[in-house]
Image (tube, rainbow, N blue to C red; front, side, top):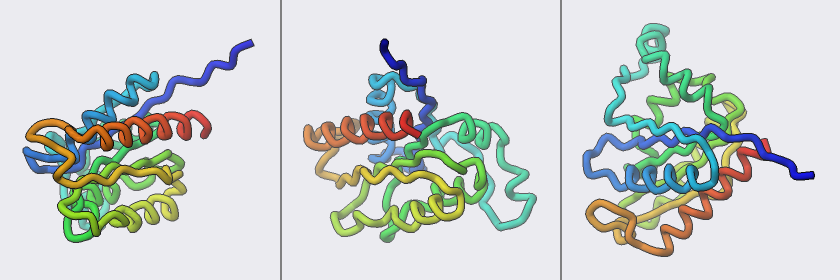
Length: 179
């Protein structure tokens, strides 16, 4: 008797607003890897998403496209592909979380980061802690951190990074299915 695992709905979010984004290249690679693992993948590109700046008022949360909340709520797992600026995830990623808040409750969340240097590898911890403590999200302990030498103009060119992205996607699938 074979046990069939449920199909997973994964949301991959490209959080950079930069047209030449390296974190977007990570997102595209992860999207394909997750599909190869059998997941249904929704891809959200924040460059193409209108969002107000969160000012803490009800009007800013009400102004966000309710479709964003639905896409987050529908997903079993969420991969945030973020650029690292000033030793932190970019403001657009944090703004999305602030506007959609409770939609993240109970989700498995993984991170893939593109950074300018090697010193910021723990930069996701503030956002990860917030998701974990505020929304009881399950943070994937494996994350990907990449610097510029791993990319060519429009793709991930480093075989080691490609392997780490595959391992990340496999782990994201395994943990999401388990939870």
